[in-house]
Length: 290
Length: 304
Image (tube, rainbow over all chains, first blue to last red; front, side, top):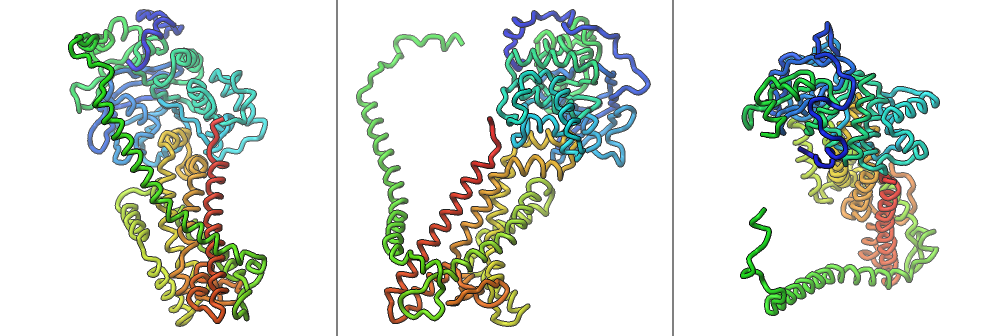
């Protein structure tokens, strides 16, 4: 557990059987080409595997949560989807991750293009300190040398900030530096930045773990609306959060210390939390380890 | 937790412990006093230096000093305009060589370098940092003698020698400043689908801007006072020389040295000029530092 679970429970009574965010969807049925498909995927740091043999399909326009104890490789897996894992020296991968049927690790694939289609929100809010709020939102276009007309830029900034539920709070100070916002606002600014880059998939690496309960609630509400347009994959340490916001849950765990994490169970969130198929999942959810 | 909840009465120490407290107070006083003495010892020579330079240099701090050269001057009078211009020209030329090379090397080492090559570069830069300045001077002397014939002296040769000294300082300091930019920001920019060079241009360099300017200023401060290499390759002259490509060019440090070394009939006049030139040089270095501070403050990323 990473943050004040008591306060969170006060805010929103925990009900494992029925996650709060409506509506329920049928179990992740394998479609012809899901937006994201992993096949026997493994990732290592300097020869030491962090996560191994992951095979799963992530359906479109839904929220998929990766949960599991620390060190089970769920963040590494997430960072492999947009090929950020390989920016660490000596980091390697094996297996396939397909984006609409195309292997992101295939020959001739430019990681820059992959990252343009797969956005990411990080654990710690990281707005660019040398840019204003507006420039932070438009950073994606700026960094890719896309030229926007003045009106198009203004519209893009506004719609992204509205989508991130931040517009009303910052509309009068768009020219001020992004670092002047509160932690929760900064994280929503980073979400707006990711949205403005117009990705197909948004990856979130524990986006609430550094935030207070109120900001966490704001971002959870935001995710409920994001899933209408985007495929969201979120890593979280907070099981209540996974239960509240996700449609599918993937549980990862390592058999022992220094062993790679493996996918233990992947199913509809309701099923994972109410009738887990594996004893390890049941133990983790019940708080018996991890 | 329960074990810590309440200590048994027997081992609770009384709040007032006269003897131990007194010893601690004394230790504290002695420590604070020795720190103060160390600070004074460090500042004393500096204070004395500033006082001496001010008291002896103010005498010739007149308009003539800044408007005339030493051409045809025997004894009193004359100025150091030719040396001031020379120092300015050579400093600018040195910066033109050392800043691009130094900053680009720093960017390469921090953002691109992988494997043995950046390690070799880092090692060589470390070696260069300790390079005696006279060796840099001899190097430039040799290079220009080979190209232009033996004994060729010019402002440019001086700039080449000084850039050898400035580049490693800029690389080292620039590297430190770039490493201060959080990895988070690089990952955020990469995650938005930016190629590495855009990440460097649009995120890393603007974030490190004020630090990089400090790095450049540190390098400049390192070389404006250099004497030995300039004595060797830029030489000394009593006349104005605005052309850094040909002939000897005077600089403030060499001016100080030559005034003190080659006193004419009126020795006091030569000494006075040397002190004033020293004062001007110190003010020059101080101005560079203040500019660096100011630029750093104005260009630092704002938080509100």
